[in-house]
Amino acid sequence: MARYERPDHATGTYFEINLEGRVVTTRTGVIGAYSHRSDGHTLYGSDRGREGRRTYKDANAARAAFDKAVAAKRADGFRRVDRPDDLVEQTVDVHRNAELEALVAAAAPGDPSPYLVYADWLQQRGDPRGELIALSHAMHAQSDPREFMAFKQREQAVRFAHERLWLGDVVVAAAARIKLDWKLGFVERARLTVAPSQLPLDVVLSALLASPAGCAVRALDLVAPQDADDQTPRLVDQIIDACALLPAPGLRALRCESRSGVRAATLVAFAPHEARLLAAGVTVTEQLY
Image (tube, rainbow, N blue to C red; front, side, top):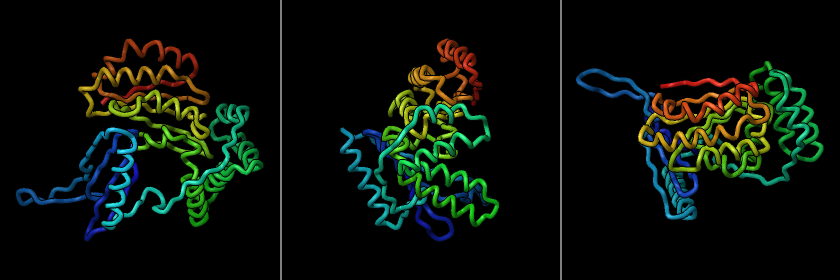
């Protein structure tokens, strides 16, 4: 979800927007903590914002509404803060090597060697993901904070400019409900939240696992949102369909987060998948709320 902020007097306001298919989702609120008076007392809290969602007749209409909303916010003084506001996505040839990807997926924790071998192979072909891997390795080897930040800024610039190529359109479109942790040019951990009214979870997960950057995910969190009790049957179907895609190369841990009601509904259907994943060496955990 793209985030825009406008500094005001003491705090500021933010605007978040995401486009996924025919659906445009927004959130607006106060930046950071806020306080207000109630019955003579000062109450402090955190503004989670006010959410909005609208489904359009087709993807073109949704894109037009998205662009119009962003243009209006920019004209009102908002600037993008989650990545460079003037970012230009770049198109380059994407190179893949199945043998080297398998070595990365099988790498022991803390061993950068397979990643660096892949980086050399990519750089020989002019693929900027080779630079991304090398920058990430150099960044984490730095003890000087200034040098670290210099590497980090360059690493982010390279990743942002090519993220769509390395993750794919489906994953980028679903960014509002995905959190990705990167390591040495690959997605190390992915957190995917079910959204019943948008792209099915298995479609998004399949696209991630098939992408150049997501092919060696180590840890995966599948999350059923807290405010979707009335959608339990659809959540169950999506979680089960997603688990049917697993295990994936490199996957070592799967965590399912849901309300107890959703877990109760998935217990019988999930059992065969759980047994298969455990047999493949994947640690399966659950978190109920």
